[in-house]
Image (tube, rainbow, N blue to C red; front, side, top):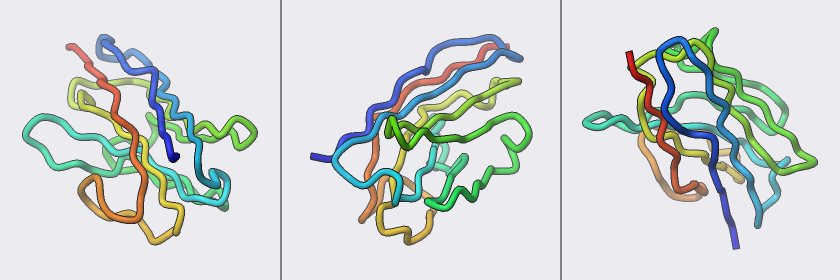
Length: 125
């Protein structure tokens, strides 16, 4: 059974930091592309950051320079370090796996990918 379990969300003041974790099981983690999406109320689900099976990273312009994605293949865990948080970062954050490495598309969830249940991040001004 495939599982993606996120943790690390919470409430923080603007300028603060959080680290999200996603522990994966049931598929070949280190052979999959991994990503973090987020969805704020009234907004579309958007790709925040991703890391390919070869280590290539991507960041949305809105988080570039503030967020860092990483993974520990020995622990099957994906991370998202979020610094200098802003109120507009408030959203539910979802961990996603693309085991077929087909490329990320807007919106979540979608076929041939795996998703966690989401973790809430709230940033107050």
